[in-house]
Each structure stands twice: as structure tokens, then as C-alpha cells.
Amino acid sequence: MVVMGPDHLHSHRHHQRLQFYGRINGITSGYSISALIGLWIVNNYQASFISNDLIYAIILAVALFGFYNFRIRARCFAGDVGAISISFILVFLLIKLILVTANPFYMMFLVVYGIDTSMTIVYRLIRRENIFEAHRNHLYQILANESGISHVKVSIGYVLVQLIINFIIIKSINQLSYIWMILLSVTIIFMLSLFYIFVKTKKHSSLVIRHSSL
Image 1 (spheres, rainbow, N blue to C red):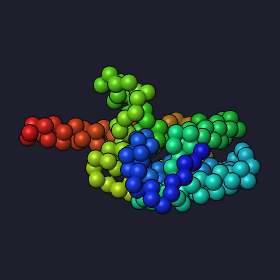
Image 2 (image 1 turned 180 degrees about the horizontal axis):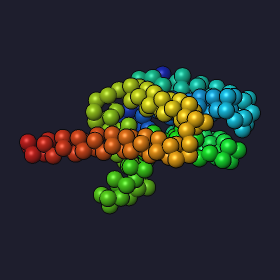
Image 3 (image 1 turned 180 degrees about the vertical axis):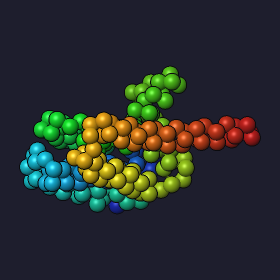
Image 4 (image 1 turned 90 degrees about the vertical axis):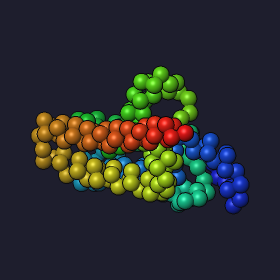
């Protein structure tokens, strides 16, 4: 699941760039923990849907991986297998929670990643690109690789935004009606999509200016 690297890992920068083509340092572990925190709160204070021991075990495993990955010079990487594995685990927990509570709004625990992925797929389809090929069109890739923001800062940003959304959903889910929860979810999705489009438009404009100046 995890590929470990030796102390001289920085000498293999080309390999790192290929391996991190889809992800940036810290985003897999940090984002996963943000979702797991939300699930733990729900499990203990709203609706018990699974053993706490399982959540603790997953958090411990992800935190251990994050200790070596959530840093400027990562010492280990999740790779495709690790990222897909944790995705299946989170989706399993969320589906189980939704089945127990009959409340689909808990899927908002993954909305930041979800909007980024969905908008990126739409963007690539519009450009007639092969969506199964490696690319660097995710919002977090643009922020980290083209906007000059460090990987760790981008990862922290994703984690904080998702945590805020999680707490809003947890606080609202038992207080608002179904219609108001739909409106709240649509508003969050709209704002995230708007930010994605803004960054993409800004990137496109900067590329046009750069080419015209050549």
C-alpha cells in the first residue's frame, strides 16, 4: 500500500514527479483524516453505525503514513494502490453510515475532493482529452505546481475547508429540514465549483498572456 524511500530519495526527483502526478505531499493522509474525524463525531454523537475500534485503527494507520508523507520532502508515498485503498475504505464507511441513517448528506464529507475530481473530468472532456491518461489538471495540482504554493500549504487548505464543511453538515443535519439541507449542500457545491472555475480561468488567462508575449 505504501512505497518507502531511503534517505537519498531526493536524488530520484524524476521518479517522484511521475509518482506524484496525481497527488501532492500530504493531501491523501490529511484529507482522509478530515473525513475520518467527521465520521468519528457522527459515530459517537449522532448515529452509531460501526465500531469505534475500526475508525481508530484506520486513523492510526493513516496518521502513521501521514507522519512520513505530510512534509515538504515526503519520505513515503501512497501511490495508486494506497490512494485507491483508502478511497474504498472511506466510501465503505460513508455508505454504511448512509444506510443506517437513511441520510445522503453525509456524502458531503468528501465534497471537496468530489468537486475537484468532477470538474476536472468535465474540463478534460470539453478539451477532448483522454480522462484515463495521467494529467496535472486537478485544482490542487495547479495550486501546488503552477501557482507556487507549497504542497503542504495546499494540503492543509484542502483539509481545513473539508473540516469546516464537515462541522457545518454535522451541526445542521439534525436541525434543518430536508429541503434546507439540499439548499445548503447545493450552496457549498456551487461555491466550490465557482472557486475551481475561477482558478482555471486565471490559469488560462496567464497562459494566453505568456504565449502572446513570446
